[in-house]
Length: 282
Length: 279
Ligand SMILES: Nc1ncnc2c1ncn2[C@@H]1O[C@H](COP(=O)(O)OP(=O)(O)OP(=O)(O)O)[C@@H](O)[C@H]1O
Ligand SMILES: [Mg+2]
Image (cartoon, rainbow over all chains, first blue to last red):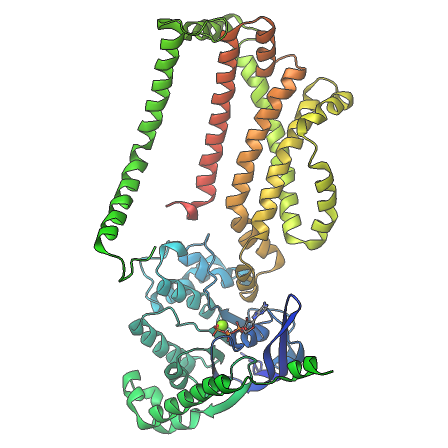
């Protein structure tokens, strides 16, 4: 099967929101390349524009300036080649667990028998057995999130866009999901853009971690984790062991420091953005 | 509700007790309703028959209503027997209601989905809407005569509005993230309509249909009062001319019962069509 290149490329992307007469610069001049089959995590303070970046890659929002490319084509609309796991799950309340997970396959016209087999596989993988016919409001938050993840995985998309997908999970399930994601990434590598608040999660999962500044969100730094992961064979080891490694804690602490510096810099003097400067001018 | 650490155990116990009471009252509710009806019936009997506090010329006694019921069922009144009158009114209500639902719901969906459709339809709608449906009766009679068509037209007009507005609101207030989720999972515009917008709007569509049905009955009875050859409204107006309180009360009760039956059917349909709302 031929596989098209599916790198994501943000090229000097800015996004301005208008709220009444006020202009809010949410994302400021972000340039970021996610290579084909690379796993990039974005961390940053709340409200720094992470979700906005992801929505632009999904085709649900568009840059005010700059451009977003997926697989060398400018993103014009959403498509099942780029499945999204939303921060607020966005499950269909009127569909059962089974119907939610099978939704993308149904849209694609996969016959029912084949669809059911795939859905069964993901129900088992996500530990949702016994809840196949429940409606989302009958599930716990963590279970809802697992359904949302399964719904995206089931499409086997070339690009996975995940917005804090493990945010609502308890620590134990979260670790299982992280290991599962690593396993999936190894069996069937795909391009992943992964947003999280949890620095450890980012370091454990990602090839590279992009750290963003406070609003207006810019890229502060990109940390390359892949060489360390490969050298120390993280993927062969259980997660607890990896999180104890000196190299892991070193990277994690470095990112923590960056995020804290970012907070303190903000407290000292508000950053002047090009947009504000322009507005303040004579 | 969140039971925080600051909550003292007394208010916690109170909350638990309230929850238990709520559950118990849900089971008891039909009995309370039956008791209320029975109480009113006894009061009615006491006031009109046992004590004679209310004159039967103003308010019928149970016996008067019973004899009116017998008369309408066995010999007929105002041009027909019970079944004919019920058939006439129910048929018109159902026809008017179905036409209203079949036009109001799709138009509401269209307006909810497309800004252009909304811009096109809304001004006309806002212009016509303040006219009370009953004010259309004279025009309807001029256009269609005294027959069924005029009544169906007026019922349609009254029942169409709540169906449209609620459907439109149902689509408009739908969580936009759900539509985005459908798009990123590959739904076509058609699938977004059938898999997301219609099911998402369904609870409000049913609210609209219930209001439509009520409006249909109101309008039908009013239209039959103005001019009709058969029907419960006709029974009511003839009974008023004959000063026959027993028959008036019986016809009113029939309207209430038929209305409740149809609303009940709609409720069953809703339970079947909106299974995810069932608790
Ligand atoms: N549609 C919108 N209209 C106006 N402002 C918006 C809109 N969407 C986002 N914003 C603003 O843009 C900024 C970035 O929002 P975004 O949701 O991308 O943040 P985030 O990094 O995902 O935050 P969190 O970690 O809390 O999810 C915020 O300040 C937000 O208020
Ligand atoms: Mg976000």
